[in-house]
Amino acid sequence: MMTRNGFITLLVLLVITIIFQSVVVVRDTEKAFY
Image 1 (cartoon, rainbow, N blue to C red):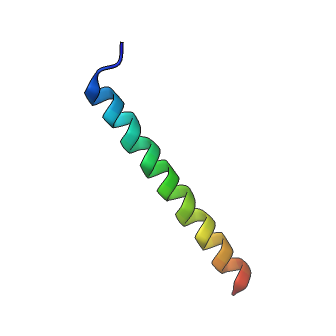
Image 2 (cartoon, rainbow, N blue to C red; image 1 turned 60 degrees about the vertical axis):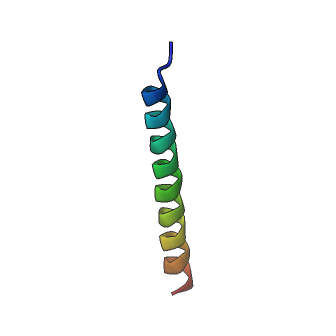
């Protein structure tokens, strides 16, 4: 059974992962251009 705090923690981790992957993609794209 999922508690509210557990759900919020998963949601935060998911957002952080998406942001981190976006930053990595942007850096790779910049390396490709420069």
